[in-house]
Image (cartoon, rainbow, N blue to C red; front, side):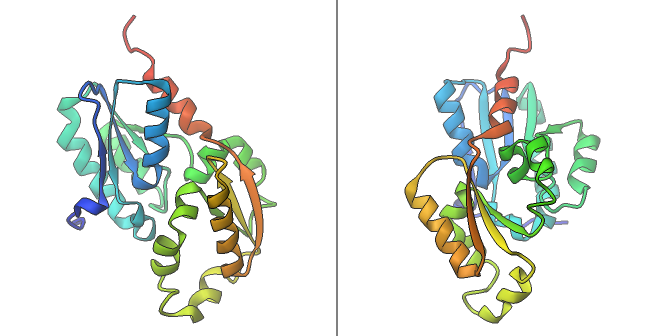
Amino acid sequence: MKTPELKPSDRYDYHTNKGQVLLLACGALAREIVSLIEINQWQMFDIQCLPAKWHNTPQFIVPALREKIREHRANYTKIFVMYGDCGTGGLLDAMLAEEGVERIDGPHCYAFFSGNDAFAARADEDMTSFFLTDYLARHFDKLMWEGLGLDRHPELLVDYFGNYTKLIYLAQTEEAQLQQSAEAAAARLGLLYEYRFVGFGELASEMKSLAKPTHP
């Protein structure tokens, strides 16, 4: 499948000029990945991000990642993918197996931010919950409300969210403004609101493992 041509506003790249490991990531994770790099003063990572808006069109994710892997394979000692399955229906894992590239464990960022085991343990009680991360709380109007066409067709709200009962904000940071934005999103969707601070979860532990030297 041919992927859309990326506009400058669609992409985010971060280069240390010393990169040994290329992280191919969802744009929704860019801020958190860069924060971890800067906090830990890691010098081995370069980042290339695909558009976060592809959450709504996951059919573009797999071919674009394959293209990036093949483009950059010779330039790095390791390429690692920072995506969950993210709606690809197993096609991402099949492609990565063919290309010999690994990804962070988990079905989506909600799981690996929460901790995959912890997220799975609450699956039954959270079955009718809609989740936000910092990124989605920050960009709810653009990515969700406008992205799903609810600004033009509010009658679609019940079709998209009629089976949800609660919005859970899985926060990476403790920002009052984001908490207010998430609570406002819950009210707009007609859902109960719950706040859970989860931090960077397994995104941090995975990057810490990747940052370890591969040679003694």
